[in-house]
Image 1 (cartoon, one colour):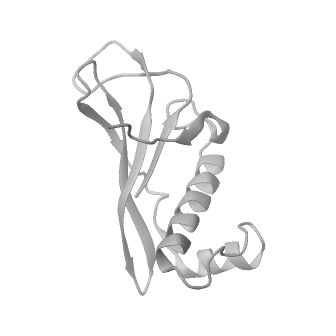
Image 2 (cartoon, one colour):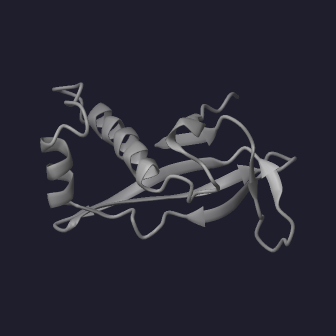
Image 3 (cartoon, rainbow, N blue to C red):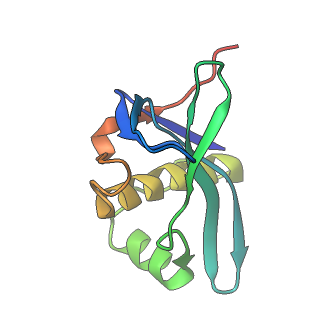
Length: 127
Protein backbone atom coordinates (compact mmCIF):
# COMPACT_ATOMS: atom_id res chain seq x y z
CA UNK A 1 0.00 0.00 0.00
CA UNK A 2 2.37 2.74 1.22
CA UNK A 3 6.11 2.19 1.07
CA UNK A 4 8.75 4.70 2.09
CA UNK A 5 12.53 4.59 2.35
CA UNK A 6 15.16 6.86 3.77
CA UNK A 7 17.16 8.90 1.30
CA UNK A 8 20.42 8.03 3.08
CA UNK A 9 21.62 5.32 5.41
CA UNK A 10 20.82 5.32 9.13
CA UNK A 11 22.24 3.26 11.97
CA UNK A 12 20.10 0.29 13.07
CA UNK A 13 20.78 -2.74 15.22
CA UNK A 14 19.54 -5.86 13.43
CA UNK A 15 17.51 -8.43 15.35
CA UNK A 16 19.76 -10.83 17.29
CA UNK A 17 22.79 -8.59 16.70
CA UNK A 18 24.82 -6.44 19.04
CA UNK A 19 26.51 -4.14 16.59
CA UNK A 20 24.63 -1.47 14.64
CA UNK A 21 24.93 -1.26 10.86
CA UNK A 22 24.16 1.55 8.44
CA UNK A 23 21.32 0.79 6.02
CA UNK A 24 18.55 2.38 4.03
CA UNK A 25 15.60 2.10 6.42
CA UNK A 26 12.28 1.19 4.83
CA UNK A 27 8.73 1.51 6.08
CA UNK A 28 5.55 -0.13 4.83
CA UNK A 29 1.90 0.18 5.69
CA UNK A 30 0.53 -3.01 4.22
CA UNK A 31 -2.98 -2.89 5.62
CA UNK A 32 -5.29 -1.29 8.11
CA UNK A 33 -8.16 -2.17 10.39
CA UNK A 34 -11.17 0.12 10.76
CA UNK A 35 -14.08 -0.18 13.16
CA UNK A 36 -16.44 2.08 15.12
CA UNK A 37 -13.52 3.32 17.27
CA UNK A 38 -11.22 4.44 14.47
CA UNK A 39 -8.55 3.17 12.15
CA UNK A 40 -5.31 1.34 12.87
CA UNK A 41 -2.65 1.05 10.17
CA UNK A 42 -0.61 -2.14 10.08
CA UNK A 43 2.99 -2.20 8.99
CA UNK A 44 6.61 -2.26 10.00
CA UNK A 45 10.11 -0.85 9.56
CA UNK A 46 12.67 -3.01 7.78
CA UNK A 47 15.78 -3.04 5.62
CA UNK A 48 17.02 -5.27 2.83
CA UNK A 49 20.16 -7.29 3.47
CA UNK A 50 22.95 -7.89 0.95
CA UNK A 51 20.86 -10.67 -0.62
CA UNK A 52 17.80 -8.43 -0.98
CA UNK A 53 15.92 -10.26 1.77
CA UNK A 54 13.66 -8.26 4.08
CA UNK A 55 14.88 -7.93 7.68
CA UNK A 56 12.06 -6.67 9.91
CA UNK A 57 13.02 -4.16 12.57
CA UNK A 58 9.95 -2.87 14.41
CA UNK A 59 6.20 -2.81 14.00
CA UNK A 60 4.19 0.38 14.17
CA UNK A 61 4.09 1.88 17.65
CA UNK A 62 1.25 2.53 20.03
CA UNK A 63 0.64 5.92 18.39
CA UNK A 64 -0.55 4.22 15.19
CA UNK A 65 -4.30 3.87 16.03
CA UNK A 66 -6.33 7.00 15.24
CA UNK A 67 -9.83 7.62 16.58
CA UNK A 68 -12.46 8.93 14.20
CA UNK A 69 -12.74 12.05 16.36
CA UNK A 70 -9.02 12.72 15.96
CA UNK A 71 -9.20 12.19 12.19
CA UNK A 72 -12.18 14.55 11.87
CA UNK A 73 -10.40 17.18 13.99
CA UNK A 74 -7.25 16.97 11.83
CA UNK A 75 -9.28 17.23 8.61
CA UNK A 76 -11.51 20.06 9.86
CA UNK A 77 -8.56 22.10 11.16
CA UNK A 78 -6.86 22.12 7.76
CA UNK A 79 -3.91 19.99 8.85
CA UNK A 80 -4.37 17.96 5.65
CA UNK A 81 -5.59 19.22 2.27
CA UNK A 82 -8.95 18.44 0.75
CA UNK A 83 -9.23 15.04 -0.88
CA UNK A 84 -8.10 15.10 -4.50
CA UNK A 85 -10.68 12.68 -5.86
CA UNK A 86 -14.43 12.88 -5.67
CA UNK A 87 -14.93 9.52 -7.35
CA UNK A 88 -12.04 7.21 -6.47
CA UNK A 89 -11.95 5.74 -2.95
CA UNK A 90 -8.55 4.08 -3.50
CA UNK A 91 -6.90 7.40 -4.38
CA UNK A 92 -8.44 9.06 -1.31
CA UNK A 93 -7.26 6.29 1.02
CA UNK A 94 -3.73 6.43 -0.41
CA UNK A 95 -3.70 10.23 -0.13
CA UNK A 96 -4.69 10.13 3.54
CA UNK A 97 -2.22 7.29 4.31
CA UNK A 98 0.60 9.46 2.97
CA UNK A 99 -0.59 12.59 4.79
CA UNK A 100 -1.19 10.90 8.14
CA UNK A 101 2.15 9.07 7.88
CA UNK A 102 3.91 12.40 7.42
CA UNK A 103 2.02 13.93 10.35
CA UNK A 104 2.99 10.94 12.51
CA UNK A 105 6.63 11.30 11.49
CA UNK A 106 6.52 14.94 12.59
CA UNK A 107 5.16 13.89 15.98
CA UNK A 108 7.81 11.18 16.33
CA UNK A 109 10.72 13.21 14.92
CA UNK A 110 14.02 11.57 15.86
CA UNK A 111 12.37 8.51 17.45
CA UNK A 112 12.41 6.14 14.47
CA UNK A 113 16.09 5.51 13.85
CA UNK A 114 16.82 9.22 14.22
CA UNK A 115 14.80 10.19 11.16
CA UNK A 116 12.70 13.24 10.40
CA UNK A 117 9.95 13.61 7.76
CA UNK A 118 12.39 15.11 5.24
CA UNK A 119 14.55 11.95 5.41
CA UNK A 120 11.90 9.84 3.67
CA UNK A 121 10.87 9.32 0.05
CA UNK A 122 8.58 6.97 -1.86
CA UNK A 123 9.97 3.46 -2.16
CA UNK A 124 9.32 2.16 -5.64
CA UNK A 125 10.38 -1.41 -6.41
CA UNK A 126 12.19 -1.74 -9.70
CA UNK A 127 11.72 -5.17 -11.21
